[in-house]
Amino acid sequence: MTTDAIIESGMTFGPYPAGQCFYIEKSACYRQVGQGVKMAEFLLLRQQEQGPTLWVVEAKSSCPSEFTAYMDEIRVKLTNAFMLGVAACLGRHTAAKEELPEAFKNLALKTASFRFVLVIKGAPDEHLAALQNTLGAVLKPVIKTWAMSPTSVVVLNEIRAQKYGLILPTAGAVP
Image (cartoon, rainbow, N blue to C red):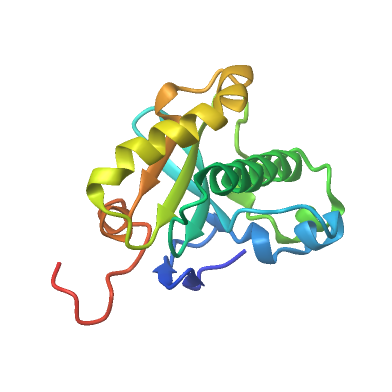
């Protein structure tokens, strides 16, 4: 759907190769679903050692002190984006037929891997493991019912997201 950079929560994601990113939050498919359905930012299709992996990416500008509600909101967004993405890949939404990249339409869902990724701008490295454990705990029902790997949940700050090739370095930053 897009090869343009995606600007979310003060970070610039991408640009990604043609056909590898579906900006689900801005899609007609999502607009058809309607109000009241929270959504993660985008889906990214990556070729990894074990084969294709569909990354569901949510970006946040900070981590508030009300941690329980925060993680519940993230769970809802990631889960909704995952379900809508899979439904779109299966052709269950007419809008997806027009806007979904071919690589997503041809994705072998039976053998594909999935990864839920939360990128938090400014999160200290020493907090990432605790955040990842908490997010993994709230996503456990999805991880278990879909037989996903325990490593399917990742929490990154913008520096680590750069290392994964998710976001561009800040202008003037030293790599």
